[in-house]
Amino acid sequence: MKRVTPIPSAANLTSIQPAATAPELLRNFCIIAHIDHGKSTLADRMLQITGVVEARAMRAQYLDRMDIERERGITIKSQAVRMPWEVDDTAYALNMIDTPGHVDFTYEVSRSLAACEGAVLLVDAAQGIEAQTLANLYLAMENELQIIPVLNKIDLPAAQPEKYAEEIAGLVGGDPEDVLRVSGKTGVGVTELLDRIVELVPAPQGDPTAPARAMIFDSVYDTYRGVVTYVRVIDGQLNPRERIAMMSTRAVHDLLEIGVSSPEPSPTKGLGVGEVGYLITGVKDVRQSKVGDTVTNSAKPAAEALGGYSDPKPMVFSGLYPIDGSDYPVLRDALDRLKLNDAALVYEPETSVALGFGFRVGYLGLLHLEIVRERLEREFDLDLISTAPNVIYEVTMEDKTVIQVTNPSEFPGGKIGEVREPVVKATILAPSEFIGAVMELCQTRRGDLQGMDYLSADRVEMRYMLPLAEIVFDFFDQLKSKTRGYASLDYDVVGDQAAALVKVDILLQGEQVDAFSAIVHKDNAYAYGVMMAGKLKGLIPRQQFEVPIQAAVGARVIARETIRAIRKDVLAKCYGGDISRKRKLLEKQKEGKKRMKTIGQVEVPKDAFIAALTSEQTETREKKK
Ligand SMILES: Nc1nc2c(ncn2[C@@H]2O[C@H](COP(=O)(O)OP(=O)(O)OP(=O)(O)O)[C@@H](O)[C@H]2O)c(=O)[nH]1
Image (cartoon, rainbow, N blue to C red):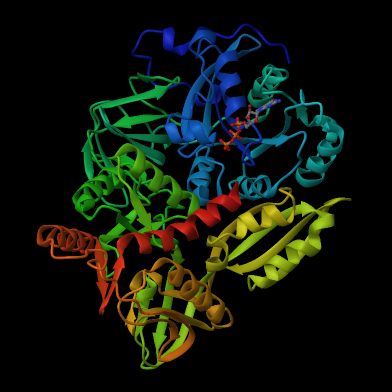
């Protein structure tokens, strides 16, 4: 197809653009890829080639706005951008929706996909298909998107485009020759890709005369403008200064501004069928503008909401405590602020004997946990300690009462009928030489092999059912280290199952230390007990009496360590009768005691708890590196 010079940048046009582009001139697409296969780099190149961002203003990963995203090189929040592109003298508007690539954010990916008619399936020409390529491809197929397979990074010396084009064609159908070859880095093949998007992605269809219906696929909090809601119009038209209604909550808001991002926000006189843009209503909380919800006109509402909406569900919980107890109010405010921008974050106050006042926080997954914690520490200058992450358990007592447990220390005693835990369907892709290693790992994690397929002669896809609890800890790190970094993983929570789970408590001189309680499979209880008791023995200073450290399941002690007694006589070194020096030493000892936590009669420096919890976290972090 012949390419003509792109039309001038939308940003250079007058600030208010005409209402609604005709649907047949629109193409809505997203780029789906495994993490690091180059989605953001390709998106950058498209912005540059279509002229919406001048080369001079270009910076790497233009669309990734959060500092953390830029530093970690990953996309967390998706964004949409409109690009002009001319083919055969016809000016089209391409809406590109950048999607997050990580497992924790699958829900956001699926909403972004629902806003498109086509998907560029991007595969690194030196790596081939990976687990998230498959997961995202299946999501795109469920949404009936036109798939455009593309091999990226063909400039790399290690690129094997022939081999992987065949792999892709085997997966999506078609001829290996039709798989486009591009380099997001050098720009090779990107114009051809833009042409192909116009050619292959179907124009959006909808009823322009019907009551307005638009799907929210993202909403972000902006300090200056409040919540910015990204929508895709399905039917009808949204106009400035209308009153709009959210169909799931029935909340009504005044539309203050409506426009498109190109990629800086530019107001328009409205958004019509198939268009992608943003709405500003002055709302201050993203929870009032939920991803997946349907926006309609409040005076002339649509009868039915668009399908597929679900509330984000936290899957992983952990206690979050300020290291300095006086920071508790700061932490509370910081969480309130963060929640404005993160509808998936949930938390409630919690107190721990060992750690004081804090919060039990629910996250979508481990990456989400790390990101929240990092943002709290960085943006609010807090020093935090988090307890080991755990999943949500459903405990049915013998009398049939059901209890949801998000904190191990709340695991009920007494007569338990059944404990259920969430399970995931995991897809693991690895070179076939690592099949044994992967199987061994999954077996130790209580995995159940569901099936296995060869993608090519030397690469295999394995499907497992695994308890989520076994994945949230260090599964991914173990998988990487056992496969020399070659395996990739994707998982999806699919339900729950009954399991033989018990709570292990750690007791100091008979008193339970809540921060160390854990829910584990009964076969792993002993190992956890021995590990924790041993660790605490090394951290708790000797007291003037003997202190037993025990690990127990219910009333049964399964491991024990003992801290031997000493008598710490601070006056021992003071000969003679210098009373003022003696007093000083005693004062000093009293000061030190303030930093102690008393568990029963045992005085434990708060630092020891922090060290025990952090060493666990750093061990896992170290392993990741
Ligand atoms: N040589 C080469 N490197 C590339 C190309 N495209 C991307 N890269 C590099 O690959 C790495 C990952 O690229 P990103 O664009 O951040 O990948 P991504 O898929 O957006 O990653 P997520 O946002 O984490 O999903 C970066 O170091 C890029 O510089 C390419 O065409 N050629």
